[in-house]
Length: 189
Image (cartoon, rainbow, N blue to C red):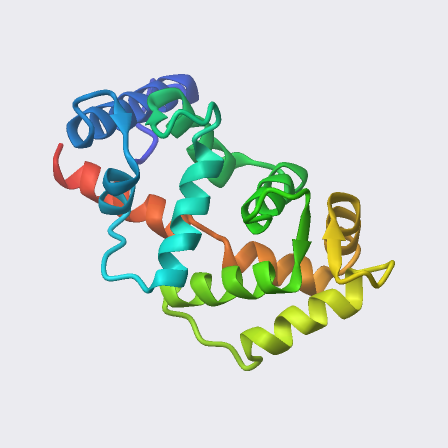
């Protein structure tokens, strides 16, 4: 969308919000997004069991009230986090995403499962194996050496290690999914 003369940023944002709402209501006429629809919405098909578990965890973190559905406000909040969220907000969300069992801690197996799932979904490869990366994260930021990352260890450790922060942010960058949706919206207008 280019800036046409006389068009304010607010008008462009309102137009974009309207397009997001239209896309949401077209895909989800009931006004809510189920897990199955969530996967379809983002084009996630033929996933492994581990990747499905990751997507379910992602869905659950976006389902803020825990009712099993993502409504439009939860959808907007998720998009806002992905597109405009600051480092602190994103790290808080990443912690919730990695803490698969909701224990308040991330253990090495949870981290490894998420890393493998993210790589499978994104189709990305890395010079370092998922196992080696998970080991490196724990060596660097598991301060008390108990085999679990507390929220504080995670937040402080990631923020104080530029390489981990960059790697984590890039691996969980969902803007390619948002871009795909935006392309579809432009094609339908």
